[in-house]
Image 1 (cartoon, rainbow, N blue to C red):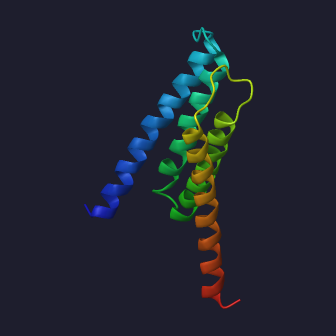
Image 2 (image 1 turned 90 degrees about the vertical axis):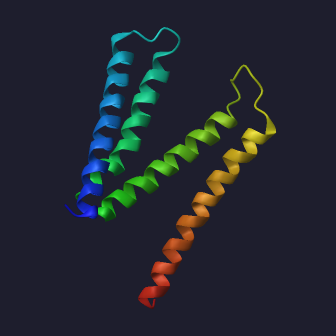
Length: 125
């Protein structure tokens, strides 16, 4: 087997395992087994499914996998910003956590803008 085929098979298997873990988290939260906050169980399950999506799409389409990965990164950045600046949180968030969340979001947006700009300039428009 070629290395590329092995990579695709391996990423699909890892994605399937992560997706299975996400589905289990969602079912655990739906069953009521999460005592503290069932919303946290749903968020954890959705997070695992969001991370698994690019891995499952990679063997079939690298373009779709890249788009799903960018979407997952934007959702992660939004979640980090929401958690870092959540006013109803009982504990104060350190300034370092807030700076890290802002830096991650800014670097992600800058990276996506630079890639889109480079693609547009390569097309000659």
